[in-house]
Image 1: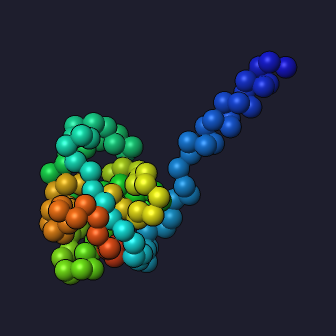
Image 2: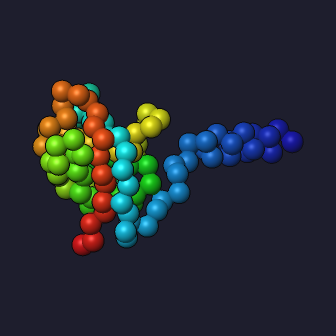
Image 3: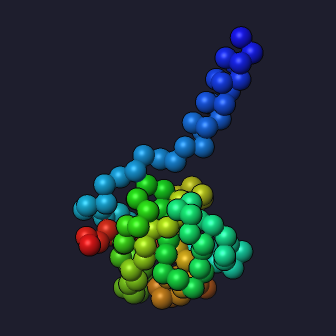
Length: 124
């Protein structure tokens, strides 16, 4: 009985940690808020297993598969950058994508910290 309860508790814990269902990147086109992360995470492992490079052109997304390339457009200034999804996040409600410092710099959003963006998956 105790082992059954322990197994149920473990299953409940793991299901709460599960990421959202992955989406098919073909035709993915969403608008929302982007934020960025950098120095505090530099060199740490991402959810995909690779080390995070704050100066690289990468991003975290909740549902797009790792390796997906997306074009991110800052809707306030029409600046664009292509990034590769290497991590899961953002972990803040209301955010669509978390960009590396390097990508945020190209979108000219470092000062504001967030920006309204359009995220479009690219076909390889």
